[in-house]
Length: 510
Image (cartoon, rainbow, N blue to C red; front, side, top):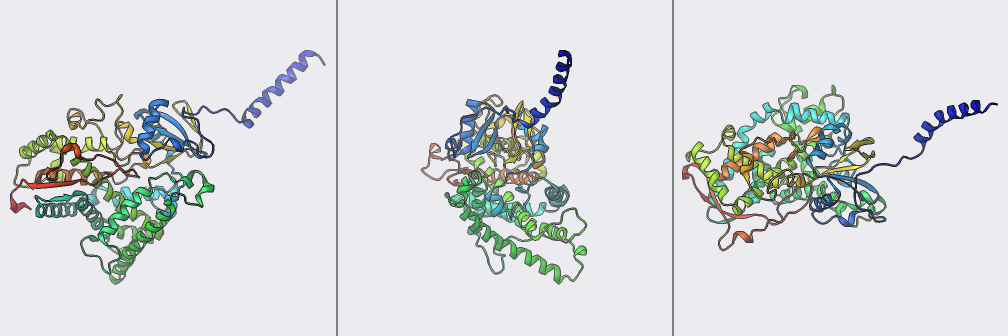
């Protein structure tokens, strides 16, 4: 055989085999930069009690897209607006799923809720329910009277306690849970309307807080499975306890609603829904849906509404007044605007907010400095993909450090300073289209109740400033006001804010 013929044959064999070998042999991935992991624990040793702070420090060293390992599980952390946009917008469909965790299993009816369920037909069905039935503009308008009534109850309680130190968080939780309770469940379960009392108000508040803590912790068993059976941190035990208590309450609510529907003696499809639970139960009866909503799905979905609708506004308003107490000039600017536009003979209404630019700026600045979720609920890569030239393998957990993004010195001047006026001269969207500030997330997994949350924050913050002058308890100095955070899925104050309120409106308005 001639040499040229042999060469040609070898060349043809190479053309066939090289692509095959390239496919079969593991390719070297270009992963985002990050610290070298330790055996067994990976980089868990680098994560402190406030992970969003730890991740910010690591991103300052390694870059805005950071590769870590928790045990052997790959974790990618995005800490800049550019990286957040690449993940939540340009590659949104690849990161729309959730990792499997003990919290999702034990506290959300095995991923039956909306927050933790995987991206797919079931989640799409839940999202459609949110947009068309639960949080539609029409339904929020129908329930506006509830938000007004509960706001007025809050103002009356504070008026009756005027001049005395109050733990503001307690009153705010009662406000927000009663709003969500009446909208979702049909009555105020924290105002003595609970028949055969299953949960006391204080206990329920503690359970909501526990739920947020446990859904935000880094449970070692999620990353080192063989250690999971030992529950070294005790988190799984706590998850089971709080889930059992909440389930008892949710079962009571469902049974009450089903009994009312039965007594009406009409076909389920003809029953007129009076609250959001009725809507969910009707949908669970509907056979003409792509994915049927089961009883556990109804409970998981309801739990999301109660927890998310309660925690977000409470945390935001409490941080807001804390920041304003440290920056007294903000009270002057807010009350000047309220006096000029609203006057001192009525309360602020939802329709007034668009005419109160400083109040809107206050809300945005609070959410910038203290986003409800410092790390957005974790995303998971559903397939191999690339972000900014780096490989993100399928199964990687992706965290968006919203707290670090909203304090990025390359984006914000004096990022750690409370300066509401930064939002008065420029219109910055906070609902997910501007990646410099992401209090409600963005993309497919954006918080579905963001419109309701924003209404509760702005209306009640405006009226707390309209109705009262605020100060710290006697003998307490501003520099003594703790601003420590307590980490979980949300970011509440570590020490509840204690304040003194003095009325600034005529007494007949309270």
